[in-house]
Image (cartoon, rainbow, N blue to C red; front, side, top):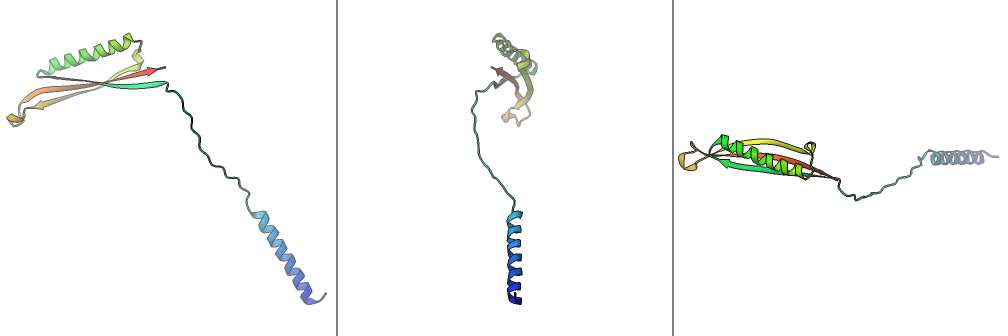
Length: 121
């Protein structure tokens, strides 16, 4: 074999080896994408109720508001809703001032109370 033939043979073998190595070093991947959707019936409903009351006398407004909230809770319990599924919160008392008297005289008090009722199936 002459020098040129040997050089071509060695270069060819090196290129074949590099090509084979490059083919083996590529990572093998499987990529999968997709979405799914499932519709189910709800098993729980949260009701948010509010009681609002206005009165010039703060004590009377508080008594009236508490009485209304108590009646709502009693009515809910009569439908079989348990105490664990009832919750009251946020007693908000806000004085409302008379605009004609430079905002110095309380016209009435506004009371708000929230009631949460959970219904389960």
